[in-house]
Length: 369
Image (cartoon, rainbow, N blue to C red; front, side):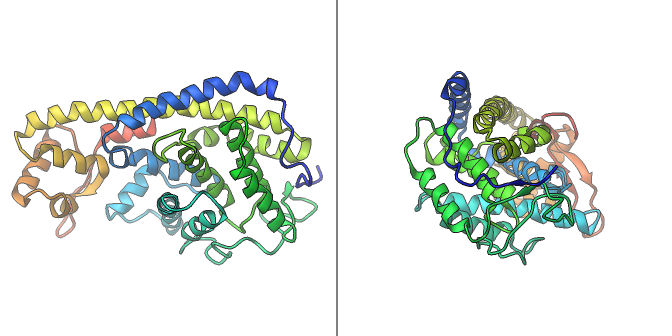
């Protein structure tokens, strides 16, 4: 099949709103239910940190990385990755998390904009594969989307030409700030158009997915920029890419919006269940750990474990704010009661690495620890 060119002159599109209205209500209601739980979590940055890491893992995996959430957390706990390639993957995941944090901080003072996106992109590519591909700058050369080594004749998609990119992104940014009939449909259009413009030499898929929680947060649909969409896109990867491509190939804007609304609804429901499970686990463990340890520091220890569900014992002892003898005793008790499990035993001067399986399994959505 010949390559699909960018849909010149079709943005912003005319939509079949009759086909979308039946999906808008359920998707909006699902987000509202999820945000009800998100708003009730006392410290979402702490308690939902495994979901934040998992989002970074899955969004990066769509682009070809292989690192797992466990490997990322083990690396942060001082474990050496199995291969140099896996180490590179882990750094990309960590950069995704850092870029999301940078964008969130920027949105405290600025609206979502090209400036915020470029600054986050600079963080995303800092020191990893792609660092030599103009991080933080829009591309000035043509690109082709397809298998490695593809040519203009064999690629799948030809994004907008570099000479037309400034005007194209200007239209995108104007649409971003315009009043539209529905925020979720607006977001669907913004996401697919961002991917079609392909404004950077590398990292466009991850930046496009990062835009989703940032937009939802800035428009007030969620109380924190914590919406984890990549699990759905990763699970339905072929349909995701086919739906994106169909917009330029067939003018299938409404079909893309239908797919996106269904994805948002399904992932909001999944996010809701995981957030509730984490909140319930925290409530349960507050009582259990207090009973097990009989310590005034039980909640502080629990907060440390929720924030870093894989960690070195020495890090907990040094940084949790718990007196060292007490911290050592608490960790011993929690291992004995099977709350914590040894991932890597201590040897010589090397500290043991411990994991909190109950929380990790909730974040993964299945029993893997």
